[in-house]
Length: 233
Image 1 (tube, one colour):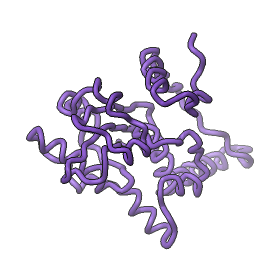
Image 2 (spheres, helix red, strand yellow):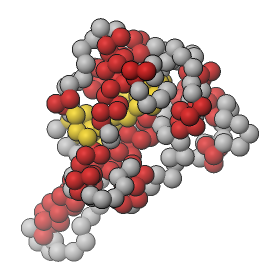
Image 3 (cartoon, helix red, strand yellow):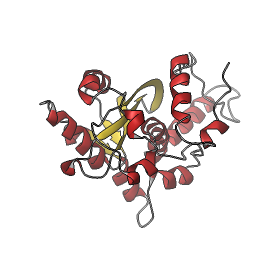
């Protein structure tokens, strides 16, 4: 089954008060495994960036001014998500912004029937505790050390890992692998690590790296991204 894990960044908390979408990140998973296919776009919100929002995701008005409008990326976005279920953490927030953008250009909204809200799933499975994305990453031992700022694509990647653990799919895969091994002669012992038949192709191009370096240059003298960014060739 194909599913799309989705996250957004915005200029604020309420699209009804003029806040706009500034970033969309999507990860495709198939039968509970990431396929390596993704969709990621920054979007020009056609308005200023409040300081509170900038502190969350680090996307400035100057950086976004050269990015496409939502109407310029909507076809590609809708084609990517297709009719797949949408896995979103606090789905009502993200979808309210996407639907507000769709309404501005007279397009049909995303239906709530196709949403899988991981925040609701987490609250049912872990009641009485905080279930923010960072908390869930810690709970399921998922490395989120790169998440120094919110970012739609990175958060979608982390959420995909959380979702697989949250619904027990990773454990089920391990149990199935273990059971299939014990059915073979001499099969009792450690279950081998599952490997992809075809390694995933690299998703980051040279143009992506140059664009990222240009963005990093806007973040001040010593951005933490420099600890992870390879030196220019």
